[in-house]
Amino acid sequence: METVLGGCLPSAEIAPQRLHDAMRYAVLGGGKRVRPLLAFAAGEVAGADINRVQTVAASVELIHVYSLVHDDMPCMDDDKLRRGKPTCHVEYNEPTALLVGDSLQSLAFQLIAESGLADDPLVQLKMIKLLAMASGSRGMAGGQAFDLDSVGKMLTLSELEFMHIHKTGALIRAAVMLGANCGNGMDEAALEKIEHFAKCIGLAFQVVDDILDAESSTATLGKTAGKDAKQNKPTYVSLMGVEKARAFADELHRDAMASLNIFGDKAKRLRELGDFIVLRKF
Amino acid sequence: METVLGGCLPSAEIAPQRLHDAMRYAVLGGGKRVRPLLAFAAGEVAGADINRVQTVAASVELIHVYSLVHDDMPCMDDDKLRRGKPTCHVEYNEPTALLVGDSLQSLAFQLIAESGLADDPLVQLKMIKLLAMASGSRGMAGGQAFDLDSVGKMLTLSELEFMHIHKTGALIRAAVMLGANCGNGMDEAALEKIEHFAKCIGLAFQVVDDILDAESSTATLGKTAGKDAKQNKPTYVSLMGVEKARAFADELHRDAMASLNIFGDKAKRLRELGDFIVLRKF
Image (cartoon, rainbow over all chains, first blue to last red; front, side, top):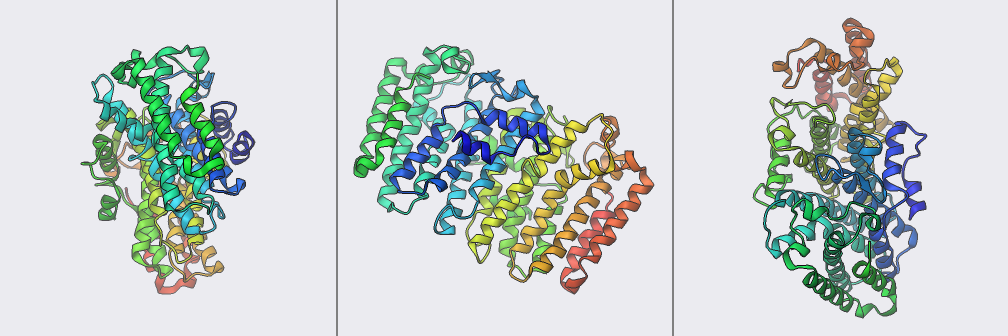
């Protein structure tokens, strides 16, 4: 994935050099790459060509990184550390970070419009729409806006779930569905099953994030820990307590795994990723 | 165009309401709509279906507005007035403005991925790539980055041209080419002619912008006038003086018009727009 992303990003030798350098800084050399891994694993279930999958995987990761760069900016979370390095606006400056995020989003759509990602170009147009909807105001960015509006408020569990289904869940679901759509091996029923897996694991990802933020150290996470409580943000931990949040993550994990049964051995990697997402320590 | 844009944007009744309200505020009720008009006029030359053209026109305008919202933010131009109204971050707040820009970009790609914008879906994929490249680090956002780096510096004329070909020219060219690609009536030679028109008129647009910024009042422009000199930005006026800048705009105008000769009466509106861009007073 690192090699693919490095090849997709403009070289830092090309003008505007400083912007390209900052884009490479933000994207390369860090991150768990959970979304690309999910796309690869879903592509494997669908028997997809790996060259196709790596393009959609890169595309989803670029959207993810653009959102991190913008979220870290002073007017949002004002964070200094990301993936164990100074955040983009700290290493460069604010206007550059703004343009890095903007340019990474454009690049994501440029990549996924490369011809030949699906046998039927109409399927590919659907994939582009899927990524755009997952990224925009009714997906990731919308979840972020809901998050901003909820700081200092008491949310109900269902409001918190609405927020996370958008903020984190939408792009995780997109990663899985784009990987799956690179192949031809899936009928509607199979696509529904894999989508259910994606929804459960997307929410579990956030529940575990909340637990880790409350329990881990900054050194382990590679980003500032304890941020949620400090910012008085509603989380699964603040609403349910750590124990119940952990039980909820386990329940989502079981539900996710059950929906993979019909795929047998082909879903081996997807299961491993489901385990990783729930059991990870960072 | 106003109706089309209003229909493309999510209703302010839909969650997250505040974000959707801010997106509508930024996009609707103002602006010259030069890029949509260029797309419509180019579509007319190509004999394109108006329903197709209005979608690509909206898509280009959404990209343009997202760039205005982000450029006006405190970390960029820190502008308070746009299209005669308070800028988005003044009317709402900074994080909302950031997410408005991000969401408008996603929405632009969502729209242009709607099936049926070209007879051949492969042409449509090419159109999406064209818009993405025009928007990103080697197009509009790249021009913006070059602009940031050039504040307080002395640029050569060719550096200034490089900047504007990216910052303003890329999206104007995209508007024309996307409109033209909605039809089937153009061979390679015709597409080259219309592209030459777009390049000349895109640069003329910026030269005239520089002249207006130096000579007009804030009330006439609907945005802050005299900003370039105050920020010590290199412009065609600062490099050539007003008289030579005006002569250069006229030369680009003649060059643009000449490349439309082969289209006869079909290019009537495109000629009118070429005239408007060079002769406008706001």
